[in-house]
Amino acid sequence: MRLLALALLLASGVQDSGKKVEIRGAYGDPHPFWNTGAKLNDYGVNAIFVRSQSLSPETVARARAEGCRVFAEYATLNGHYGDWVAKHPDAHPIDDSGKPAPKATWFMGVCPTNKGFREFRMNGLREMVKTLDVDGVWMDYLHWHAQFEDSYPVLLKTCFNDSCLAAFEAWSGVKVEGDTIPRKAAWIFKNAAKAWEDWRVSVLVDWAREFREIVKSLRPKALVGNFHAAWKDDDFWGARRRCLGLDFEQLAKHVDVFSPMPYHGVSGMPPGYVAEYVEWFGRRLPIQTEAGKFPQVWPIVQANDIKADVFEQVLRGGLGGKSTGVMMFALEHVARDPEKMAAMKRVYGEK
Image 1: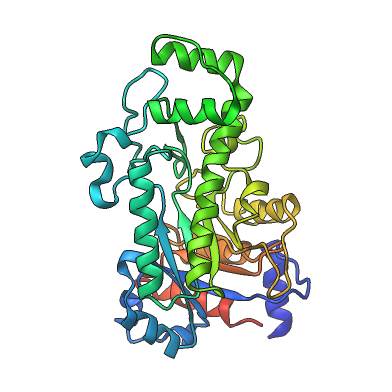
Image 2: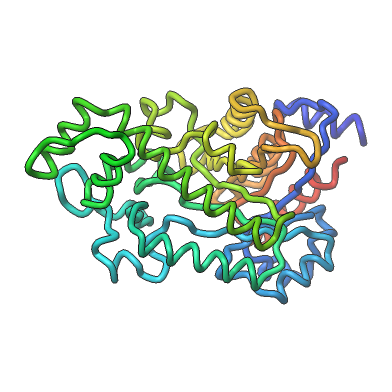
């Protein structure tokens, strides 16, 4: 059995380095899984990641009884929550034409410098962490308005409203020229593009800083994680930093666990990209593989709209490199497919 397991690992490109796999996770509400009569620990699952609005004390208790740690996902910069952007037009991101940025495929971003929205989300975070006995909270949608989970990403230039322009000038010391938003945006891109990029990064880092402070003040032992685009530095001409505003080195000050989202199918990539990206990420940052040391990397892989053998491949790929954990999106897709259930049990049952 040990030889078979090793052969499968090597076939998927995963090296048996002696590291300890800490998390054999599942993302999503576990009730569809429980409705099959299954128990999480019977399938090797030792952690669940659940949307905060779907998580209840009863779900936490049952998952814990089945040997699982419980992590909440918190939709940080998604303007759909509370219909905030719809009800507060001042929070709608403004593009370089001076118009409200169009909604992405299924995501409505929000202006990260909107003080009302920030208070709304941070207050919601406090209440959630007070109410639920979670082992950690994962930031989601921590990026400027865009859509990256597509074969052809939606990349937008934002935000150029008054609060963003004022905040940029105060942070950078740059006086933006122009009498209209299009002219101001054009001036920035020509004369202060790097400063603009760095400022946008700093805005997200400050969100992560406050997020971490809130979580740690209420639950000191809880981990702070981040779901993020599985893009390398040069992908789409550096769009991860330039457009999304994600700088891993700076975020690492406030993030215990990075959870890249290499959803190969929806992104138009081959299954092998999962292992490739995880290997790259482990080289890119000082990722730790020893329990209790951070930052670590626990990727989340695609489970929907793929066959069971591919699901098993990407699950193993997610455990490649310096990864000490993995999860899939989403548990409900595994629960409705006996072959995927068996694949999960195989991978998670290996020591």
